Length: 102
Image (cartoon, rainbow, N blue to C red; front, side, top):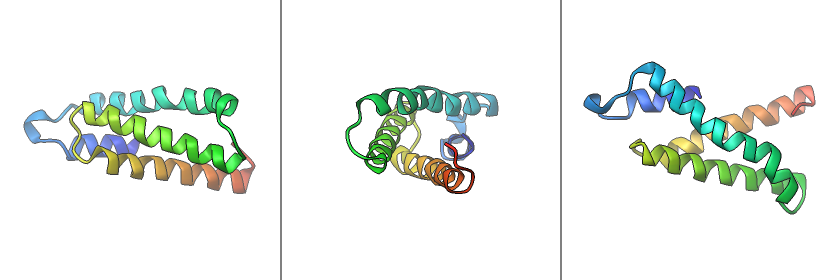
């Protein structure tokens, strides 16, 4: 969410810039849409090993969130989505390696 909030606050035209609370809400919306699908749907339908499922989940999240942000007018939405989801996946994998969760 912090990366999306930053992107929405700084990368849109000043006359089109949303209030901070709106940026936070939009950023939450991206996660609220993709996370349940990644956590509850993909494990049931995605074929392959754990790593294959991780790759499929991340590809879905990147593309879905980029489409969402592009629809809302964020320039370079795909690049921002790769950055946001890469950071999220990296932190998740670090947590898994160090804490055993998720």
